[in-house]
Amino acid sequence: MSSYRGSREVISIHVGQAGVQIGNACWELYCLEHAIQPDGTMIDYNDGEQDAFNTFFAETRQGKHVPRCLFVDLEPTVVGRYG
Image (cartoon, rainbow, N blue to C red; front, side):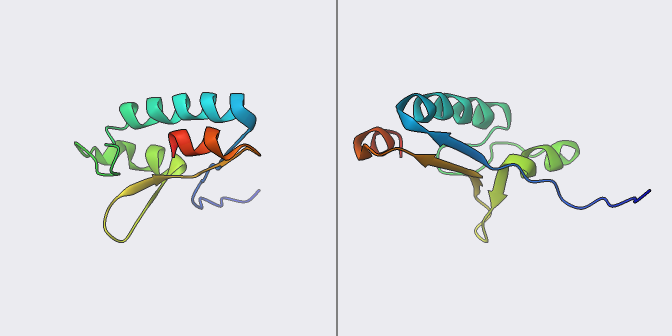
């Protein structure tokens, strides 16, 4: 039995108008739960939960957090409205 403890990363893929709208609502909740502002900065930092938000967010060199997600729709106005 292996004891591999590598990093865990989740990538969300949201497809179509409904997928984009639901995905946007989910990511708003994730940001609220992890105290991440719309510009990617964090309000407060809790060491115990670092792995939890690193599963769903990638940290840039500037210390900002961006969601690990992909929004896809053939109609650009749907994705553009939320992006």
